[in-house]
Image 1: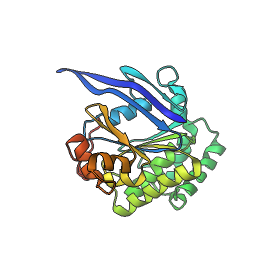
Image 2: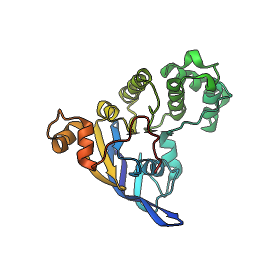
Image 3: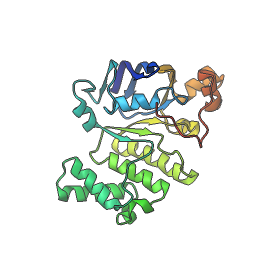
Image 4: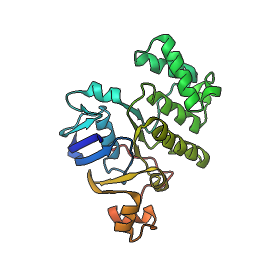
Length: 260
């Protein structure tokens, strides 16, 4: 069953130099409970597509549904069905983890008591219980990303959008985040829409990959199928496969992602 479906989804930006077609017409389907890796070089249209699907940016063309809610006619339904973790996160360094989680619950119109209960549940599920009374500014990078994801899960969304969730994390923290993503799908059936420049991450986590370049889909399939088709062997590296598809390498691990 499809939980995300798009048809010629597009976004053009007006600039002083003229219109810029960031997304030229994306057609894709994401199945319920799937972990989808959404890949592409810098400037390919990944973040713009993700922002449209989460109602943060209005499309200029095409159509999409998320969990049965139409992007154009029912944006509130889309927002209720999805959680979004942006590249940079958004926690207040001056408040505690507990305060952030409770505030997020209140924003979703939970009662004070229920928001406090939900904060404890999320802390337990994401290994934040021992950090509840620590200020967010004192958290490590991996701890902050777990908090970002906890906040996105406050309302138990059907779809979780992760935009470069492990950029800048050390290998141990990255591995912890990988385990968390797998657990979210296994235990709660959460559909995960993942953008990443780490091709090993996409290879390890994704049931299926969609590669975009120039604002359109240029390849899609399971990691093994894409390696076989473009790399010549299911044992080919995803880096070589990505190069064959796009003619360009993925951004270096320490490069700042471009939000286009």
